[in-house]
Image 1 (cartoon, rainbow, N blue to C red):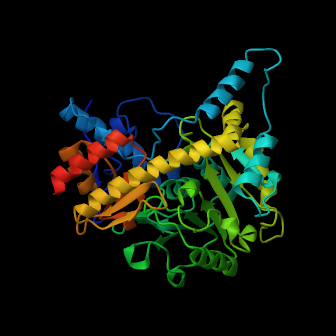
Image 2 (cartoon, rainbow, N blue to C red):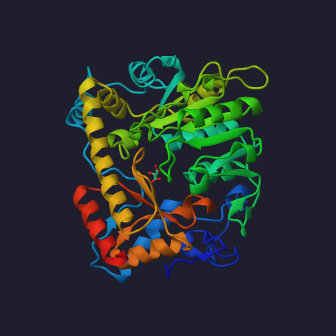
Image 3 (cartoon, rainbow, N blue to C red):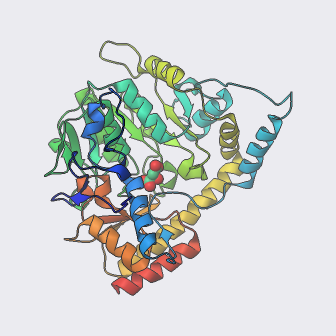
Length: 441
Ligand code: MLT
């Protein structure tokens, strides 16, 4: 089977699959000569023209390894954590798991919304003085899964806006649920989705005077991939814009713990936000839970539909219908993360990643690049003027065996940039920096 990447680029360098009539066994699209059911393909799935970003990167790395089987690959691509979870957290999960083997310690299903102690702890510790109630916190198996559950809540009959660039799950889940038109190959944008440009010119924050009103605004802060954390004033503008338009903000705070300056860590620090915003967050990037899986979503009671009914009631219905609650083992770990000792340990790991980000920032800066992010986020966002970001990704991989992420994978607005993750082990960050210097000095 030919596994070569069957991809082409549009004028923005965005990766596009070949036309449908091509046989694409490796992409699982069309198998010639096989039995077919009478099931029609979901037309929204047909609209998805690109692979999901991270599997596409893996695919290219696999190809690269075929060419260079002995290459020592360093992955600074997907934002996967590398530092161990704190001892107190691991031992709490081990204790809980051990208890499951005993009659006293065994229990089955938990509450779909999560363990009340954990909901309480999240509300108290992470939303202190912000008026978030325990019952407004829904514990989940991760932010990305909650994004999809929120999309199910919203349905197909809403218009959405996204930062461009931003985490690709918002757009892809929006396309899947039917919120978009077709991809416009020329611009690399899906029709009916409002792309809020965030570039160096506007300080990586949208100019709302240029943004069309939509029902929903997905807003990732600190932004993935640019690393920009919005100031209080900017978030006030966001809340004001949403309130004026009667829009819902789906605020993704997955990286809040990386905010090192006095920028707000939660949208609820902004007066009026509880009336217009749902906040999604996760233990993945704050406590190394990318594999453990644990996150949460806050849906305020004050958030109302146009008919006056509460969004929280519907969200609870979605959670009860589509989710049976997060793993109790993971939730015991989540509670330990929020203990004084656990949280201190977490912050020390966050500091380690911050130091990594500084090493990467200094490296690219010393090589003459304009570098963004890194201070309030675990991502360093590097500008390669005039270059297609997939070309830069390929070039770096070819010359250094270091995996990055092309900015255009986060939307056409990420063209000319690559994102470098600071979640690596220190020795790999240092080694990657040396390799970058060898290529770009
Ligand atoms: C990223 O690298 O952007 C994210 O870590 C991927 C994810 O959270 O799924």
